[in-house]
Length: 144
Length: 150
Image 1 (spheres, each protein chain N blue to C red):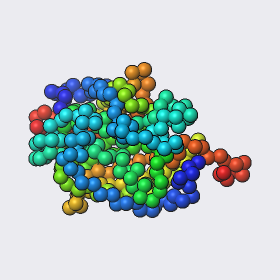
Image 2: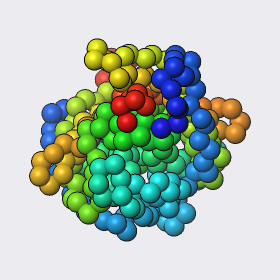
Image 3: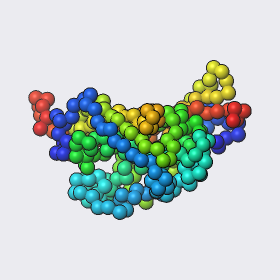
Image 4: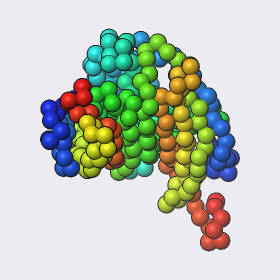
């Protein structure tokens, strides 16, 4: 877990951004049909800068900072919901996966809280083609 | 409109799958290489005992594979994805995913299908619930003045 104290985790707390260079193996190794969103020509005809990286690939990148922050709790209590908007993400894009705590809901028994976060993936130009929310149980350090 | 998946051919409530995956050590290693995620839980011990798959392993992709069991999904695009993690997925196990067409809709002339799915371990333990909104094609549906589509 990235924090030492519950006191740090309040609404507005921002998780450390995780920088990644986007890679999808299929785009590197295969060619795609003329009506595929993974085809450069086709996507450019529809106003995109190039072939789109698949949503599941981006969801995978967004999961990593959640595991880093929530630890094992992410595997049993984590929820994430993402929307893919704008002109998407292309192979080789440098992005930052970000998250900010929106709500903290302490458990009745104490010792843990369910957090609700706003999450995003931001490109180098400042646009955010991936937006969403995430939620999971954050254990108190005393419980670990 | 989608030429590969006629909107009328999508039936809400129709079951999809199952799809079955062996979560092999090699597959998880390749995932970790591709996503540049070197957390040791995926290759050695984890808080759950042995190695586990990354929690997003195949998440979202399974919805497309479920759709592909009935339709040609090559021109589709994921527009929304939601996942609820329930349990870890140990490396070496099989994961079985079952789905259902939960909805279909047209928004701004574009056709979508919504797939709900649940992934299980072989013993029936549910490990992840997902909802995926999938755009059938970048091609728009023309709406006639009488409300019909063409």
